[in-house]
Image (tube, rainbow, N blue to C red):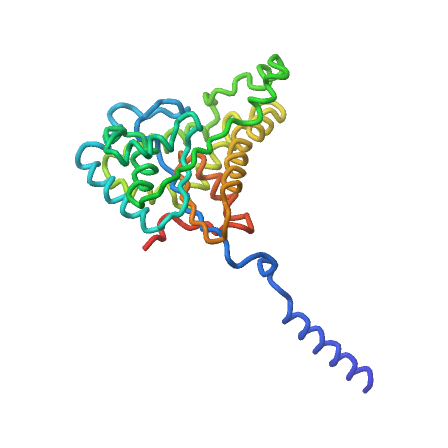
Length: 278
């Protein structure tokens, strides 16, 4: 009988203790800086990325109907009410000067999304500062120490793989290009900032040249693309000064895929789904 009472008491204590277990997230702040990542294509088509858009699929955001669609997109992202805006630019791009020029009525003929989205939103919200936080990657630093080693490491890393998945990737990217002229800009930016496309965009770096001999693919990715985005994330940490910050990050969507992961995992930020603004 005593043994039965002891077992029952122990069981009740265990159940009671189990009900008091805390969630892991309860150890971190409830109030977090809000982050909206606006992944986009480069609207002035500089042609610097591995994937190139054909001329027939390029749009002009300064001409109708895309001009009006840009107005709709800007009105939508302003709903986030950012307190800080981050753009994919180097300090030498002189974002602060360009913001002042834009307020004076200049630069309105620039198709660059940094102007059309970043500087325009900053101007319309009467903000005085916009942050240029682009970074080079660790391989740039290391290559200066041993050029020959890095030439060998990056040999055949040229996005020309014959991997069947790489072929599928190119078909998908070409399909995305076809959509841009055909659907509204807001709908398209919502699409490419969805979890599905971000995951696929991230996965695009895990096929093709990632499978180069030995571990060259993982080594390149870690010190090149992933490292660059980690450095960008670190720059955003440096400008975060309060859990009340509302930070809008305007970057090429290839970056957005990794930045999503970093913000979602970080205990100091709340990642806001682009399609959730009301």
